[in-house]
Length: 451
Ligand code: GAP
Image (cartoon, rainbow, N blue to C red):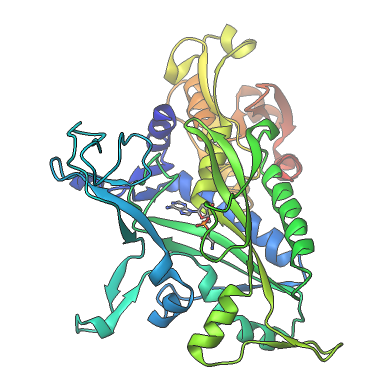
């Protein structure tokens, strides 16, 4: 994991937030390549969940919501983790931290950091929502929360969307947006952070049909994840046991990935029943039921939720793409070990359509008409793709830098190019080179980037 974190910084994927001030705990910033990668993942999600479906509408609800939303949703009372403090070293832990020996609050409870016995407090519930104040007065009445999930913005807008889009149940609402949780034990890079992005879809169905839809969405979501190019053996399902279920869920399945730190969830599919809509109906005093135009039945819809973290999905994609390899063939023979030295290379084998940069353009040398032609090709290509121009250092070093960035194609303009207007296109994964007419590059790349 350390190697990936270091590559992410070196190549401009992810930086620690406020680094020059020593960093802010478990908050991360996306650099030039990271923002492109995450955007490609989010766009892929949006395309498959909204644009390619007639029964799902998009939404972008505000992060700040009426405080009663969080009472109705159960987050004020139920979105808590049990927390213990060490009175000696002042560290805080989740009460179920596996490193704790003995029982917190009892003489045998032992702090996993300083090793003191009997210094851990008894567990107390700690709410994970961030509080802030609305308006100039810092009083209880003005307390609002940063949303801990995007889903509630969908529930409170469910009738607005239903009526304005003229959808009929079953139908869904999808949203991508920031969520915030004051996690007690965040960590593992962008895996568990205090500010993150979710890609959530709530599918509203007739009660009694929720199991069928639950199965349907589990299959759909796994297909989407596989479409990211993730190795199948690194993916598995995990069904929540009764003690793992969130306060709103009757049934839940996680899609897990085998990260370097073990199997962990990055997406959940939840049967939320009518828990949220019924509670909002009660707390807001507004009817949120649905009149079925065919049967004339009235019911509060059940909800099947698909909830993915954009950051965690980006981490899955990065972990799965990261490889250290021996370079064989002509690149090794030419001794172009570059950045890493020797014939080793670090490469991100990202699916080309997810890669932040689609191609890099290299004039072999900075003379003999090569830079002029390379600039012309770069200008032409960047009207279609995110393309990088690099004329610094040996060609081998330039290849290695782009391998680390996950750029699938390297376009080299050499002596022959100025004679016959052809270039070489190097494939990041196979290291094979094709000779392609400069005028056909857009077509060539479009074909290779599909999927
Ligand atoms: N609306 C349901 C919900 O929020 P969740 O299982 O708590 O369910 C869904 O979160 C997804 O959001 C997780 O699978 C994960 O990808 C992402 N997520 C949750 N907490 C996170 C955190 N602290 N940091 C990064 N991603 C997080």
